[in-house]
Amino acid sequence: MPTRGFEYRSGLLCCEDVSLEEISSRVGTPAYVYAARSIVENYRAYTRACGAVPHTIHYAVKANGSLGVLALLARHGAGFDIVSGGELFRVLQAGGDPARVVFPGVGKTADEIDYALGAGIAIFNCESEAELELIHERAKRRQMRAPITLRVNPDVSAETHPYIATGLREHKFGIPIGEAEDLYVRAARMENLEIRGVSCHIGSQILDINAFVEALSKILDLIDALRRRGIPIRHLDLGGGLGVGYRPEDETPEIGDYLQALLEKLEGRDLELHLEPGRSIVAQAGILLTTVLYRKQSASKEFIIVDAAMNDLIRPALYKSYHDIIPVRAAGREPVTADIVGPICETGDFFARDRRMPLVEAGELLAVCTAGAYGFALSSNYNARPRAPEVLVEGGSFTVIRDRETYADLIRGERTG
Ligand SMILES: *Cc1c(COP(=O)(O)O)cnc(C)c1O
Image 1: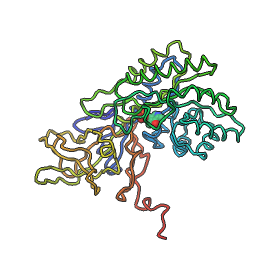
Image 2: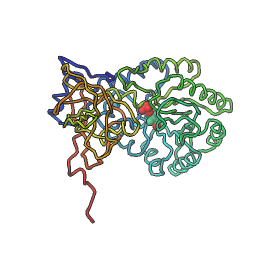
Image 3: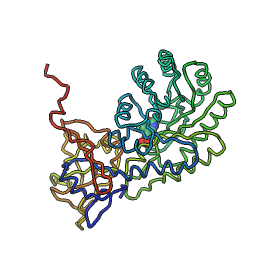
Image 4: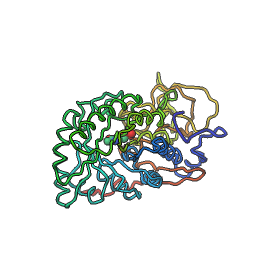
């Protein structure tokens, strides 16, 4: 089962040392449940593999920006990767250190830049010349120097869903690698900028480590060229994007193997390594817990209707992504082939189609696996459904890190005329 921190004990699915039945009786369903130790363990796998190489691991907030998750990682020393002012606010509220925050993104507004400069973030990863000029101007007003890298687009193709590939010339992200050198020269002449390094991010859910190695080679060539021109480059930020297995038969790349491949190339280079992993830290450490509402047979199909829906977890509808779905009670049962669907009025509201799975009855609990990343973060109130609560389990105890929304929450800030 493609999860970490979840296992059957005496036939009952548990998150760390707490049974999912107990969590459901406390907070109801649908609910997101996260295994804290697995999240920390994944983060530590990054820092451990870096060993003596100077590094900062910036957890990508957009994968799962819930305060409880951010606070957990902040306590263990993580830096953060933000893509908006709102994410910076979340990091600060969770006790994150602004001096360990990097800010990529193609559309930073002047307000967001001011907020980040005021908070004293570590680095802006700039994605265009116009943005560079705006950051320069805002830093000048404050009579300070803004620390920057240019996010370079290395033009490597990584095999992933086209919506989450970002490292090809045709994508909106970064500065084409062929134009980067000239822009660095221009940036070096801007007084209120301080060049720190080079950054890139080639996409998400990448399972082939060679794609990262290829990007790294291209970036290292660029760094050599920049250093020859007297531009001091101290760090290299390779972004995030390491994938995880979603299907039971998928292999999840080991974080240590991935880093080993990178570190070999960095040897003797006098570069600090920065990474921005999101998915590989939280995806497998989370599930979406849901209750079977009905079974329904049509002429040719068996439907299992559950109380979670695409507003809670949109990945199957948005990316056609696969999530393993398992019963919380493991009792031996007949297998069926069924569609597992939610209550929303859209045919796209499904978690699985024609899935072979154990037959479950109304009232039973199911776990939608590998839902810790881009799960709650992409959830909405579509169909006026209050958003699900989130529970963080640590050993034998658990904390409700977000309450289930109420009907009153649904209309907050609205008026009738
Ligand atoms: C989304 C994103 C990440 C994180 O990607 P994962 O696939 O979740 O590791 C890192 N850096 C940037 C710039 C991103 O946009």
